[in-house]
Length: 283
Image 1 (cartoon, rainbow, N blue to C red):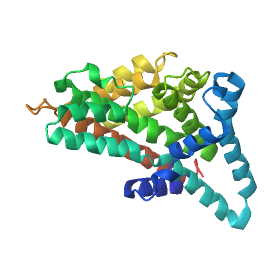
Image 2 (image 1 turned 180 degrees about the vertical axis):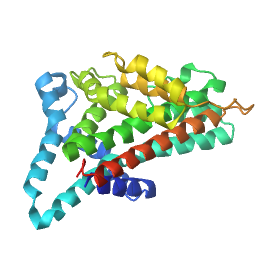
Image 3 (image 1 turned 90 degrees about the vertical axis):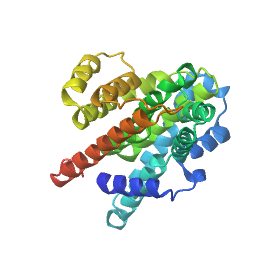
Image 4 (image 1 turned 60 degrees about the vertical axis):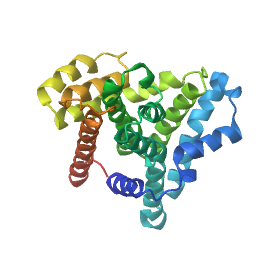
């Protein structure tokens, strides 16, 4: 079910078939607004409840539909949750607008869309000549945060794991956008990211320059406190030879090179999952 759900989710995401109002982050925003509030979540018990409730509801749904109609309802639930978790049109639109702005030489618009694409990139602090590489790093990170990590959680822990990860990620992003100090969120996300980020980064090792990337991966992977973002970006950059910067106001060559590396890495994950499914390791 994991492989089939993943392939359907990728297809739906690529074809933009799911309206934004049905995408997971939008649904979580409504969930947060309806059941909680910023003030309530300043207390750890309420924050924990907000994080665990969607995963708990998913677990109950999975348990209720297990075995019904010869497993058809379970399959539909897996597919539906995979689609909800994988569709991220906001990031796709921001990247598309960034490329268009770069092609027309609009540096100010490039800075704006780079920040919208990845709020943690600090794009405003880099020069125009370095912006392409910075956005390429963001593309490598976003490919993990919004696609790779979800795929790994779906494969290992099923819909419950995917929903839990997306919920924690949503509240982490929300706290940074709103300048809130939400308790336990970032610490929990660090724990959830620790192993998947290292697995995904090793995919970059296999998808790019093996020797260079492996040296960085070995150095960073066994440090308990190394942030997931740091290891994913540094391994990705070491795995790919970035092309020379063109004289254009904002060069997109480094961005596209790291984007291609990210695509190869995700194809590798799907291929490995297919093999694991064939040999019965993953059902």
